[in-house]
Image (cartoon, rainbow, N blue to C red):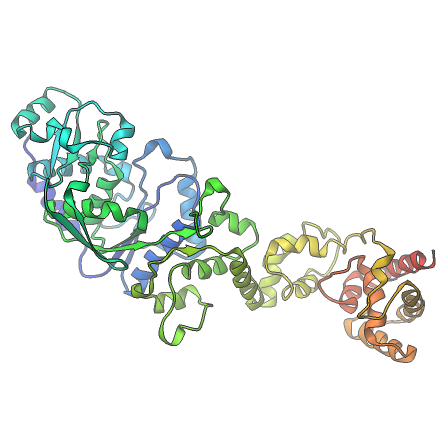
Length: 495
């Protein structure tokens, strides 16, 4: 069972050096939650800011949690967000393969190498998989820790089932450095001899990611702060192999509120959920970037950043130790800013599918979109805002009463009596013609513009709140439909 040291030398020779290399290493378990998206974004930004390499690696060693189609969700999300990877399963690279299950033989060899170096040992104790995965093992009571290596090798050669465990020093301390939290020291006696290689030959997450990070030349490891407790064991693995330790970047969690982390189980949205709820990808990314990071210097007072701008100004030192609370109202604000910054043509393009949910008729969609752009925070608000174009809803006569416009049903009856013949007489059904006609009519009647515009809009739309005023709505409805609705409104008022 002698190890082929040539293999390890060849693997070392493949490792890229000389520039920053980061990796996003998701597990394909169904969806991209906000915390995962933030990790991907920060990892990408670190690489791009340094002119480095961004690697996508799929960590699928936990076969029991895999969800069919989840890998496609990862690819689609990364592409939509513009988080392009330089190396990965679909584009290849110098340290392929980039899917953990395709690297199975690698982990076995490195586990054996670690045993030879004294950093791990064969354990033949009967323990349930769940106990192994949880690291729920009393090191002091493990007799396998002291089995001579030649005896352990013989038992392995005889076919006895085993796992390989990390040999944590019995005494002393381990100190690791994190870019955000600084130096952290733990007593070795508080660390368990975690399983590195399971009975089925697959590595545990904690072992596979260390091997892969080293062999892929990863210089900066970004992950959630829940992994801080595992960092000393990672350090000990790197030291046992004699490898350089990467820069650790542990990000504090994204919280639903002051007490609870965001969780799909509790109905908190994933990236795809947010998209379905009408948020633009650019707004989501901008907001997520600020969940635990804030710009410094000349950008300290700004909050709207494109992905390109973020890649230029992102600084590790500005990541906060404190948890970030996901505020949906703040995301609404970001989304509104991004919607309003779109060109009219682009807004019409993104809004049209939502307009068409309730507007089936032959209307000017660009005209409808123009009414909406400054008046919605989320695309999903659109269908309900414009549903009156296809059919005027039933409405109450009390809609004609408005204190600010100084209207009541009697006033509105008089206004519509005057407006209908004026509008009938328009030969040019344009926004300007309708506007000028109504303004001139209000002046001739001796009333404020709003006193005339209110009943025209209510009769045309049948709603108290509309995107756009009477003039725009009448123009889009067309002359015949406008007059039909105004006459129906007058009939209601005369009844």
